[in-house]
Length: 291
Ligand code: MF3
Ligand code: CO
Image (cartoon, rainbow, N blue to C red; front, side, top):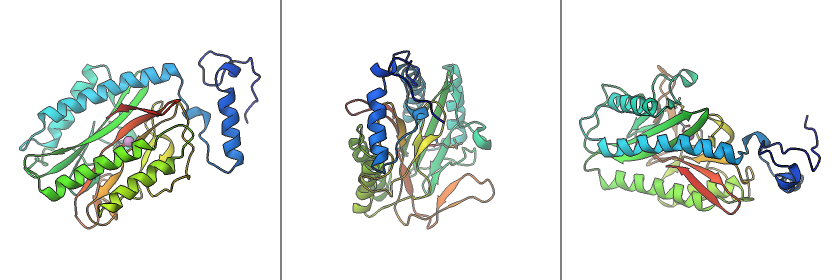
């Protein structure tokens, strides 16, 4: 049940401002969209200025960790070393690696190599080889605020084919990002991502998407890419979500390792790439918080 606020009541967003000066007009716009049949975001995923500031601090750690890995990743390194770096750097900066013990996940980071789509387990046995492409997915909790982003790394000389997959996947995220603006729809973004992958002869994983993030690791909405312009949830100021398409060189089909129930692979064994950014919808467009 929601209790209707009076104009002079404190706003539900906990900004401390009066409802009429804060989210009243916003709510009226939401109601109108809902009446038209659109999916509207719940209040609990709309962040206020203080929360956004806290989330940005968390993002600083995520970015610093990924920057460090970018400089130090190399052929001959095993992915357990990456896990150690992530744990040590994150905790030294006062954060907690969000993946660690998340729904039983046993490591501080996901390292997904070549045909591994996501949630790859770091391991002493996985030694990075010249020609590999690897996704390093880092997520941080700082003072209760969550950040989440990932990058692709090419190890030494990588085939032109794989390089193009990595590049096009990054372009998918950039093109999707252009569609992020207040009072647009998540499907505007999703279709842009999907169209670019498709135009390049690739497929996008259907089952795993992005997500709201900030006050929890995974919040509403679920962010897919098989969506269409003008559809899915309305994007509004104060929303934060990830854009993180997994783009496959071959077919879109995937399977989950049945021994550990985490690691995801392409069914056809062809490579997969992913970049993940965290984006804030602002009053006049968007701001990338983490990449
Ligand atoms: N970082 C992943 C994401 O983008 C989360 C993986 S869950 C984990 O949503 F437990 F593996 F970390
Ligand atoms: Co994510």
